[in-house]
Amino acid sequence: MPKVSIIMPVYNCAQTVGSAIESIISQTYTDWEFIICDDCSKDNTYEIIEQYSRSDGRIVAIRNDINQGCGITCNNCIANSAGEYIARMDGDDISLPNRLIEQIQFLDEHPEFAFVGASANVFNKDGRYATISYPQMPQIKDFRLGAFFVHPVIMIRRSILDKVGLYKGRDEVYRAEDYEFFARIYSAGYKGYNLQSVLFDYRVEDADYRKRTFRTRLGMVSVKYKVFHLLNFHWYEYIYLIKPLIMGLIPAFLQRAIFKRRFMFKTHCDNRGRLV
Image 1 (cartoon, rainbow, N blue to C red):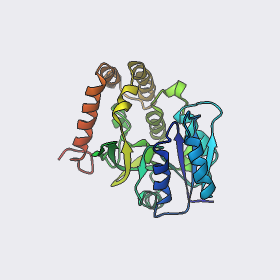
Image 2 (cartoon, helix red, strand yellow):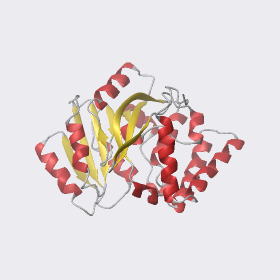
Image 3 (spheres, rainbow, N blue to C red):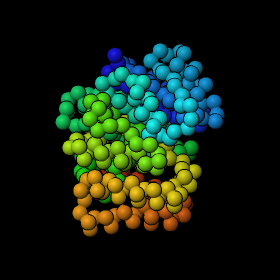
């Protein structure tokens, strides 16, 4: 049985999935299995995955019968995995060579943490332009603003999933499956940690901002409301629910500028996320 299972939901990633897979094959740590689930792509993503699966027995290619979204596709990967630790990955991102070994060593040495993330370079077709470096130990109060973890670079203990459950489907959490998932872990009394070393290249293209429609923002308000209730926030903290709505009224090009500015600030944070 492998120490770690990497799970990767993919959809229409034919142009990038090869690089994502190669980044796992190139890891300094080798005791892994790689479960990749294609969510009914319309391009040849699945055929590319199958080719890698035939050449490396550690790579398992599966496919959904219908398109189910990121959360359920992650769950399908987990159901086909066996590792003690579960590492996330996306089909358009890159894991740097020491990612797995550093996260495994941390979880081995720190049983008090349920999962571990890391810092990440932000890049697009033009190259890297910022670095996300969240606080080492996000607190429950931080969920008023967001999750404070880069979702595709987390590694979690399988035993925690047995206790808190898997991801929710898109009908329940829209595009916020990671936010709800982390909040549920914290509500159960567990916590996560962010390594400050950069272990990941996280792709954010300009087109991604157009996916965040006002309807999606409304859905996010609904998800945040449930999370606030789950985490027992005070009534006056519910004012933070308006943030997604405000962002939904901002044109995509301004959202992009805010996003880049936000992460440029993160490059100047200390280990507790404070600007220096």
